[in-house]
Image (cartoon, rainbow over all chains, first blue to last red; front, side, top):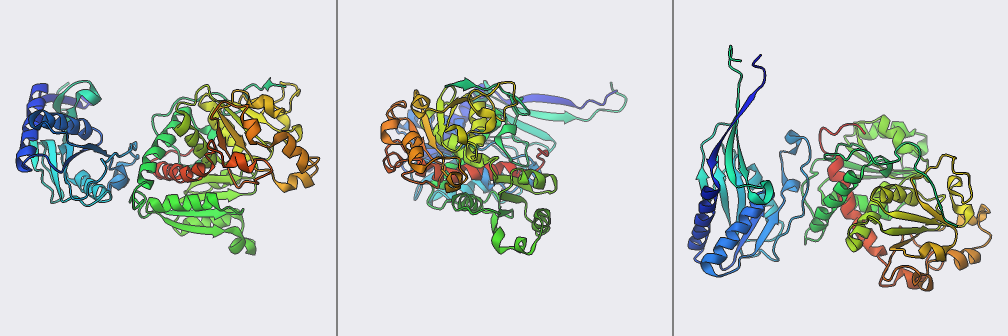
Length: 191
Length: 338
């Protein structure tokens, strides 16, 4: 009797959309920083890391220059753990050499409340003193709880809080796509 | 003579690999699965990165109070847990039993209840009596970490030993680890046997018959229940060292001689000291380990302790990362009682 909650999913970005968004953001990073001198890309675990690598490859293709790419695990900096329950699996952070005086572009898949970015900023500052920190995200889904805004956005996707945005990437999930998952309340009378 | 003992008793054999960490206490390694041990080692890798920074401190355990309750003297273990807790921004309280109400006759459980009432969430505990942390774990809401109980177990030491081996040797499956010395009275040896055998390591225990646990004595009927998972027992050090990837020497306590377990120190040194000539019998580059504190010139020669193969100081340094991993994993919410 209609007890089961149904999960509806629809694709909001295809593999082609993701590829084009990454290449556009790479151009924007180059434009805004007038080249990529002193630029360091830091991907946030898990899916920010392959995105940062892809941005790095696109930058090299456009500018012929290598940009250092790092990985940041922010589990040790989160303030929402008591609400989440289980500790996330911890991975090793890998920040390229020295970020003092560098322009660090933080890369993440989805920007939501901003709390993860707040934690990432804390973590980053423990590694050094960048001259500037910029934020690149593939999807901005709104609902910010902190004064944080992205500098580069792949796609703005207005969502309700009951929806979930999932970014799937080849390197982690075996395919490229962005989907919205929506729980549907069982409707009275419907089977 | 070489003999194999069969796995017996509770905890023998591999359990189902855990999906993640679901434990509130760490009492010994016999209860952990290989997957859980791997999770600790991987988490310790991430902690090692934190310790390599200019300011080795992260806010993960802010607001958490860790109590070190030590009923036995300890320098490195207590300091190691304290540094680990501080690197995670926890508050640390150190209690040495001699200087506390324990002297006034407060019972172990009273002390534990008091500490819990004061708001501690993690109890790192060392006790001379085997099993004491198990008793405490049954009567408290705190997470209990066994930092050594009697002759029974010292799981964080075994984990840091395993972590150190892994950093040098990679996958440990099929490797051979020789533990030499006073096996009978060694909680370090016991916990290492559990942890290493779960990871597929072939463990060789080498000691004079008087320093082997009764159940492991060579020539003993094999239907007797064994306190250990399968290990090889060897009383001849030269034979034990054949093909060894790791040689771990254990501290020889002076009391053992007074208790009549050893005829003389000279004889022990002659037959069981880990020295440079004997190391040549192991695999080239075999790691030399010691849980500390060392009696140089007794169970290990100064030359062996300072050789390029020795990783004894690294063991101490790695201990902080491993204990950070334990504190991080054990303080998560919603862990089931284990």
